[in-house]
Image 1: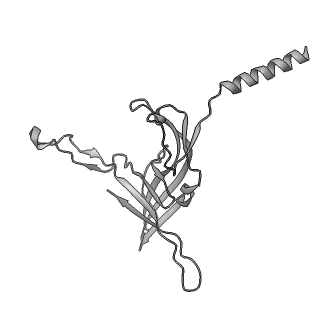
Image 2: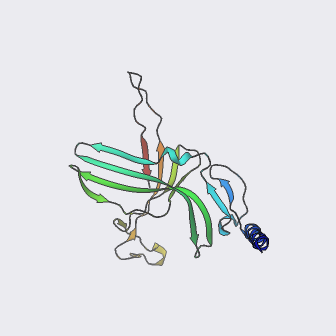
Image 3: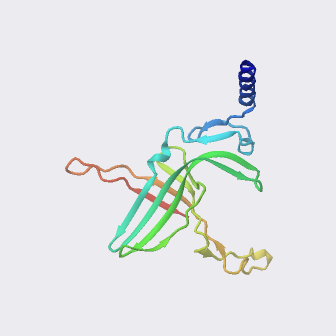
Length: 188
């Protein structure tokens, strides 16, 4: 009886393992040619194979007198991006961005935390993505002049700038040390 239970368990385990579908890992920094629908199947995982995202993770600060601005970059691993409206189903690694502004060491603004990555890199020196300002900033959008002009949406549209974050090269100091790494942030 004991042999029958063990054999049944092993047979069940093998059957389950054969039915499991694993992800196809794609190096996010490679130029591999993928099927046109690769991001619709849920079978692909755009992985940070070389850990390039680690170069950016952490808290980055800009201080100007009594003002301080922090950018918090957090690496997310194997985020499942599913969007039925756009037929997207893919796993990917990426970076989330959050920022804080201080005046006299008092927090005066903190952006909401995203639960999804909005930045990625191909080479470990430049992140590309976008910032969601969660409705704090808006911009006016107008109808095309050919349709009579006018404001498209009262109060404007939320501002979602595309951004590039570039790591600047390390600088050696006169005493042989190295200054902390710096970022260059450009949003349009």
